[in-house]
Length: 404
Image (cartoon, rainbow, N blue to C red; front, top):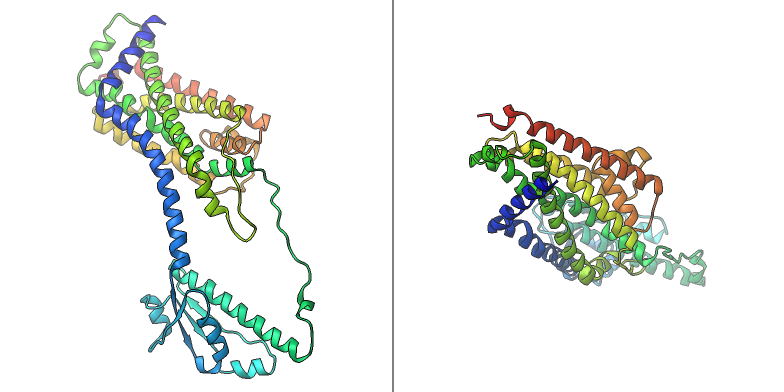
């Protein structure tokens, strides 16, 4: 045990002495996370304000048959009706206009006969401004319909209130903590998994492929220390660095979310049903589960990185080997986050990485399913032991350690 601790301290000192690695692994991520959160909030706010303030250009065919409708559209909020010569669809493709309306020539006759009439609104769906124009045109048409109804009711001396039937009043029973945890569930799990992988990458490569490249691995292995102690010392160094980075990054990111998150998610969550309020505090139980599972993830990824990078002959080659690991890890994370209403079966909590993401999302909103927690923890412990066992076996093979 003493030898293992000695190797662990030695590798940690080597990592800390490398200022470039320390800057890339600790300082930059710690500063980067708040910048990402604040920048994201400002970007969302800017985009929403820009969309609200922008005047959309629309063209209308056969304006002469529906002057009242055209006037209603012109009086609409931030809509500019432009005169257009040529093909309407071509103007949309060239983005000369954001939307176009085609009014049928029988419009006036149909309205006079109190018959339904259909107008066509053309837009380019891949253009966000075109979607905004569609929404504003639809509102103008709705206003025009209300004007027609009021006129018809007035002619028949009918109270417009007869149209009022059942009204809807939306009430959200989700607590502030649940809505806050739901928002955190889109960010924290992704960053925990990502930094669990990235955190120990530099150290894992440096103590394996880096030692090979510098021709110092032989001297380390020739010391009067058991090979197993060397492996565990290196493994603990990689895990310590990775776990430290996860804590630092998540701490700085969480502080930024608490400070600026209500503004970010408040903008996104406001709508016709009212403004959503958020409480981003994390319960001690949830925090304990997050930390415990994060440790298991770090241990598993550290062992895997050591096993992979030792096959490389140089630092650059090891980076190429570990690179695809990001895709394998991040892909399920993104997929699970893209399915917020996904109700997983119990066996999903036995899948590495996926189980951690699903469990994180549950505990952040205050749901503690004992079966899910036990399944996740036990399965990750098994994966950690398997990964460590494989790593120790690989480091005991001379052909792998000293291959040219």
